Length: 495
Length: 128
Image 1: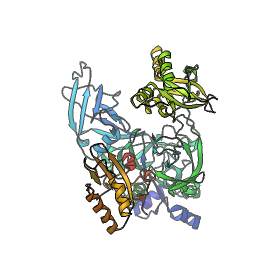
Image 2: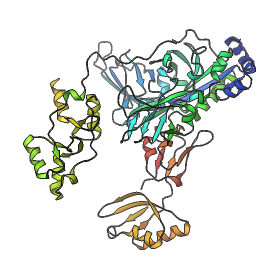
Image 3: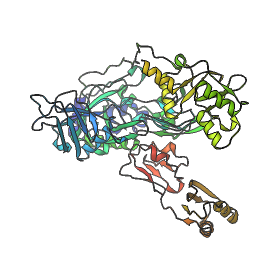
Image 4: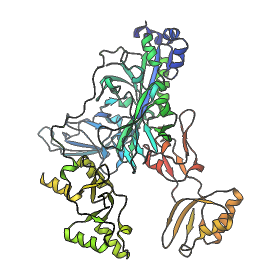
């Protein structure tokens, strides 16, 4: 048994023995007793996109002063529902013109890099704060405070993502190629901080950590903290003014949004054998699930259970097919973080702290309980669908479109199974190109929907594929209805 | 890169070059309109064979420009996360021993999947 005070005394003497989390498994397996006796601290690290991150900023007062009602930094809006010249800039907030290419995360990186930032604020004017507008250029040095406060950091582990659908997907888990062509995963596995102390024996409120190159603190459990299911998180805080751009990067998640890569290192004091054993975990012992990200609902089907060892190997077999994997966290920078933290301790610049409060061990991440029933597509679709057969002529179909005042006709076979769709635009093209057969002009690869899909999901589909309607089919591809953009707009207007 | 001027855009020069020389080419990118065209090919052969193809193309009235760089990575911006790796269809991007990103330009077929997906915008392909 060791205490943190004893370890800190060793740091003071320059005698503390520090190893990296990746070195611990071998040491521990070789000689557990000796390892517990001799190793004082294990450093852990991660460098990944952590969306629930941001900074509290205080700008100081202008003259005449303004009560900032809305504020933008490089055209990225910060939250101002706090005091007059305080704001919280979130990592995922988008620039109003540049969209996904520049956002809160990038502003934070630019601040840390010492770049000039354009500040713009508006207000309604009060007796004490008469000013209604202010615009200036500032750098981080001119701010009174710039405090990073991250409501959620360091998730213990993540699910991996794959896309079984026919189209490319842009998700928070990165770009997913169609037909299971790649797997993206996140987290650093055996060196990840919370993986090394899953029971929070040493990690707790008040634990000093490495945060983006500065000495930061764990200030509590993170949002969505779910130790019961193995997805624990922490909330972290640190002084942005002491941080380094090496360990903090604004990032674009293509087609999804922006984020911030946050570098975190947590020292784990080896106080007893139980703690040592936990830090000896290997990638092959850490399991996660590859989920079907083609399913746009909360419950995503599990495609396969894998270990981080398999994920880091670069390829995973799915149904006898080799699928390549991409990590989304940087192992290289994570190793640099562990080394840097080790160096700080060796040089007597960083001391360990006792936790002042434990993190909850029994909570679970709950889903939103929707009190208002959300309708599914089956409830609003047109069930009496006007259809045509492959044998019908283009003239028949075009007169049907006119007669029924519709823009598209699903084409079905004798069993009512969907074989294609023809739109009025297809007819126009048929006339222009002198085509005669329905087969030549219809779309065969029809974007279909199921009756249990939510309206938002179908709307997204119509928007993404730039189509005006989607036939609704059952499990046997039999046509049971159709939903058009007009149906959805009308429903929106009525509400 | 082949620049095809308007007077030859309607003749099958690339195909006839392959037939004539017996040397295969791989078409990586192609944009051919009624008045002009740009095609990027890689010639599958040794230096002498490559020269043979290039000469035949020039003879056919096509301007041939050798592209020096395919994919390049700005190491100052790159954080070595690896988001690009599994997207590359030709394994032109990989990790080194120390988990740094390595890009091999000669394997790149200029599809641009990695450029689009890079969170740090550190990857680029020389413009045509």
